[in-house]
Length: 82
Image (cartoon, rainbow, N blue to C red):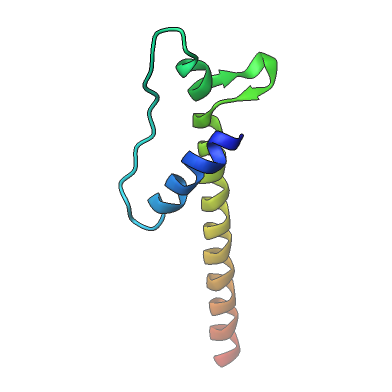
């Protein structure tokens, strides 16, 4: 989780601010790159990809709920005007 918070979460934030971002693992064979990126669901260990996807969908859910609320309030205001 420390790797995610330090290296990947800022990339997710930057992506929603318009930056082009990439996260990849580089290293010697057998050093744990695949495990770090993918995790192991059977062990309850989430990889960087899963953690990033969770943050992305959480961000989208927040944005969509705000857009929906603004639209509903706008509709209510129009109804009151008429």
